[in-house]
Length: 402
Image (cartoon, rainbow, N blue to C red; front, side):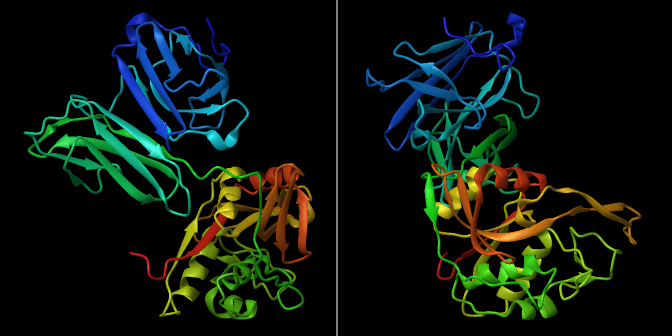
């Protein structure tokens, strides 16, 4: 009997803790179809369209970690712990064959009434904002009217059949719940569903304009990267115009770099800013272009693979790392004059435009406002990116879209 490493998932729990019988089914573009069933004996995962030759790996955390292999007979995990899992499957070693994400609930849950049973699948993005959610009501009664939410109850929509689907969603987590339209006590649990980003192809490159921050903006790497990003969309704007008229700035060592640019990018003594400041700067500038529309999205918190997937989709990404990939350490400190919070600036902070990657060569390609169009070691870039809190901003034109 195949089992996961005990420190990962096979935590032996009392039999009474697994209190319900669940099943889930996921299909990804007709390529891999898998099923999962849980009961008091544990969790079983098997490939419905097993081809007799391939081996398969599975993930319970939305594709971050894979285990396996799954053979012809599937795999059974004894005494699977209660909880909510994001299940997906891939052919062993083939990252491009990952299925969509099925949210799978085992055991007791603490929210909602749970007297309506639903299955949810997060549909992977194939291009920007093309992901989706599919929810199926197991015990659907056509005589009854249902409503559904995917944003945790902020908005509710009429369900017209046993399956409801929402498309045009950005990669990320959503909360789905179904309830009877005439009785809020009759509802499913709130289910956390992950819409995954596209799977990187392994290599990609985008041509974007190269703009140097020097000599005008010695500390203006963030706003220069923004100028390159909007320049990719054919909008030629001087980096100094963005810095002087659209970037919110504060006095030297007085404010929060997460809210404003600390200092003036024209000064060598200034510091800089984080992603939210550049989002606001971009929105101010792009809103002045009345004939076109854009989405400016803070995708901070993304894993590097998500950045690469957007390069595959044809979009450069503004990213935070470090100057020449030097170590990131704690630098200058000051008191936020409004809150009294101690602000600690990270030395060697740097912002650039990610335009390419090559997994085989272990490289990333960037338009670096200091260095030009260069490549860096992929592993080192990813380390610096994480040290700078996984900050990234994506700009996509939406002119003409509904």
